[in-house]
Length: 502
Image (cartoon, helix red, strand yellow):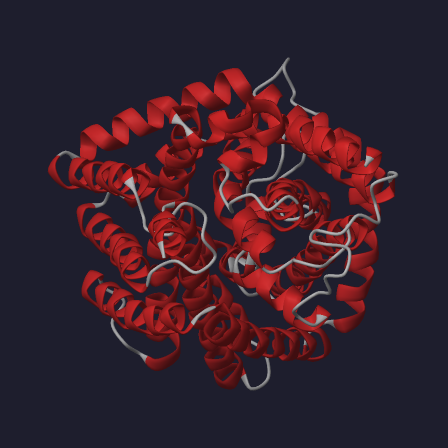
């Protein structure tokens, strides 16, 4: 009886929940009371980080890629993320759908058209704007930004947590990924501090994306159905989506997120194939070969080139910004990936998490961004201007100019909404795990707390104009977490060596 009480008590949220929630709410209050001060402070911190640590982001993210590749082909490749007899709980198709539900699905839809168009109009240094070279560079950099680097960071965090949770019976906490280095200190002040930093970074990053997604859904409703795209409509979208994702969150991963992920992967596949074959098919296939070839051929130059002898603001605004943004999301995405990857071998995990999403993301940008570029260059349609002025509507403007444009736009709107729901759902679940001592079955009221904090943060900052400031702040928090991921590499290798020697 005493033992059962102890176990039950350990599953209850503790001080980690209250400190992290209070910090996030205090940050929101800052954005409401003094949005200009928040904006100034956050942007100064972001600019300082990019100015002095761009080299570290470039080196670290490239290192993460090659460390993951090493694990896939190392002597540890056949070790399971679980006991030797464990088998994967989800089919491969469902597993991939879950990766996108907790990862980049919403980002691909948001930026799939807008980013290539913006790179075309404002290309990387040394490339003439609106030229053939600019179009090729636009797709190459889009593939690069959404390819191996961000997924390597997510994968490292996910693999480390899954290994220590399912094979070593540790808690599903960021701190417990450092057990070989810290020992029992993971349960003390140092471990709690690591978890609090991870929770704050996750909550702020997710709330920012929540707000951006609300803007795109509202913009899509305006373009497709003629609804007014205003602050009020964005708040209504947040309210509706909050109800939907909380219903999904309370039903659990095996029901809510799994079902929605499978539906969305199907919608995304159908939309992708239709745009591919209804659009300039040959042009897109040629662009795919050219873009992937250029990405592979110039991989080291793209990954490690910083242009220290000339203005490198473009790379700071895009590449470094993306790397920091991806790292700030790593606690959330990595923890979620770990939760759904039990029973897979290290090689299967690495190849699935690293290459499949990178390939699918690259193809998405080539098909959607390439179609938009073809319309811009060869069909006389000006998509660049609306893509720069209203990023959230770029996808719908492109879809409207294809056959059955209205139907495609509705499908795109549905896709965004479901990705919106699954991302918020999985984020709520992960925040609840991290603030409930690592239990995989957190209390429902903890999910409700985080759900309302995320949606409330997004709503308040949309009104006050502090959303971009919050984004800048979340990216600044990526710097210490990048260091933690480097230490995770040492920790997991130490654990694997002990495992192999047994």
